[in-house]
Length: 363
Figure 1 (cartoon, rainbow, N blue to C red):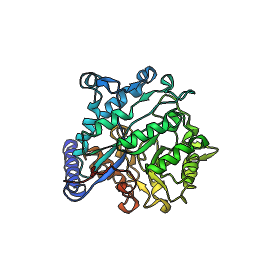
Figure 2: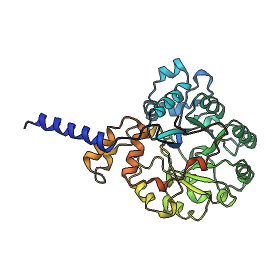
Figure 3: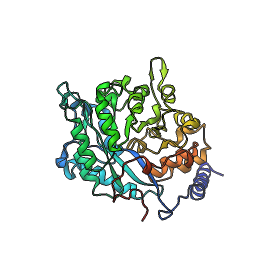
Figure 4: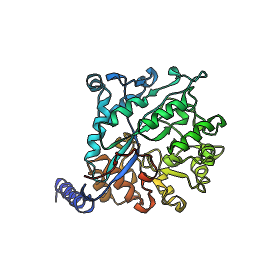
């Protein structure tokens, strides 16, 4: 048999296994998961109010992110920043496993006077833009972002809740927020009263050109947890160290708080090797994990099933790479690496989903 014939035979085998082993349930077979960690972006077109700093535009990251979102700068200039959410919704509608996604706004750095420090902010995605756009799509939900150091942070929190926010997202290393700051207590108490969970980045942050990674220390979340805020540790502190310990070790010490949850987004990225398996081995977190992808990075070269060549059979990995939908591919990879349904908590029980938004229904 020639080399070409051998390769063709292997492709046929992979196609067969893909059909048999990775056949996904049809949409009508009940509700799908909610991706609680999905980013959007914008460059300020179409009246979005978004902006990207000159420093970020000069970085290789800028083109990388546009490619991961599946858009070009020219398309955004022509169709407006809303195009990204439109394409997210369209791709999500084709998923057989995931039925809705929380689209995250991104507030900036607050200056000493409590106003937006535009010079120190690399990416800004206003709450109003995200809230208005997700109303167009039944499979998208609004994730607000409010820097609590803003002068009018409490007013912004009220507005976000009124606009249908299902959670509040922080990126402390980028927004320069110290979650352990006692001055944030009024914000935390109102967050609890409104029933909004706090999704806060944990671990090191490398997606921007600069970061204060000490603010990604999970131990700094003890203050909101002690006040009764529902806290979700984004990425399970899957990278970095603080005070001589891995951030994951520091996250593990928070397990006794019943209001503490962990999202599994980004844990199959190349820069977090072995972190998903490590988290899944912790029985204390079973039933408290939330599904997330960190889109668009889950749809980029940072996540490749082939990176797990020494964990999973080769033909199985090939089968996963052949799954076209990025959400279905992400979830299938995580399942093959050990994720089981009973490890997850239903996001509908944690998020504050507005009445009338039947997020995740399969109609």
